[in-house]
Image (cartoon, rainbow, N blue to C red; front, side):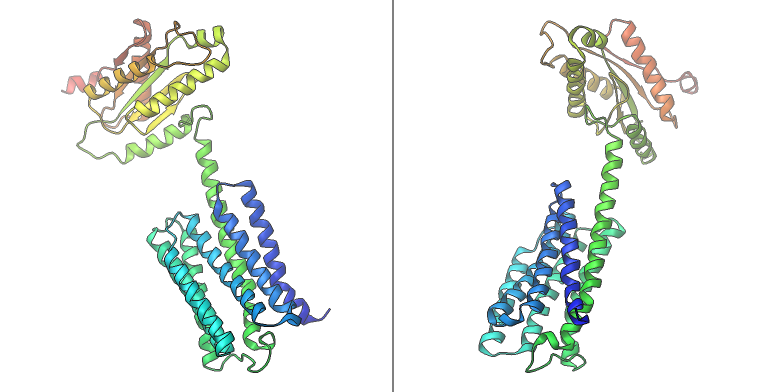
Length: 391
């Protein structure tokens, strides 16, 4: 097996590995469609190199059109996958118009006025426009991380490389082997040599993006309660700590509201834990929809906590009454209609720079008062004695 043959195998082999890798990743994460597009991009790239280097006995216009089409499809799928990854708009009109114009010019320089250089300029100009259009959309999507900026840089690399080779041929720095097969030219050698590096860099960038998102998803999942989808205690504490640090001065104080399902032990004992889980899930939905705040957590077995960035005492009591009314309307399969569902609520409005732990303790005392005074009610914790004295 000659060195030239092994060199020709390099790009199809690399493309095959990346194709299989990204398709397997997509199989595990079907909601990430960009992985499928990326696998198809590498597949088209590998097929293009294999056809160009190993189907020389069938050299002709049909093969050249097919190879060029595969390369353009590979570049297009790569660009679209980068855009889909960040949910950026896809410039369909730009891509389609560039592809159509490039196809017409390529066929002109292949069939009407044969010119190897003309085909090279056309193909690379098409790729350059794809890269520039992708960069534009990625920048407009406001990259939020170094990984996102890496994709912008890759789009720039594709555009620069697509323009550099034609410029080099114009300057006669790269030979295109006029009158002979393109496979034997310096130009094709540069394509074969540079593509593995570009492919590996592209794949690593997507791997980094995928890993970054996977870590973020795992972190978010770790901060969520599996039954209700609400924040768990750790996620709630972290989110509230961040929100309290950003609260503007001179506004109504932040507050916490503790909600506990009344007689929940009876639900589990009389109707089973499956019914109890359904009650918990229904309660979480009510609090998320009607709680009038985005920070809601399941912070205990049947206990939930809502955080309000800023709210007046009258507004908090009104919100609590609305939640109590909505909860009483819940219907759960397996729970008799005559079995009443209710909640008790303890509320505490923050005083000065109270930490969350003190706010929760005060709200818990108010909740205990609501429980011991008959349940199915909301109790507002009184202001700290020192604040009353100072007032």
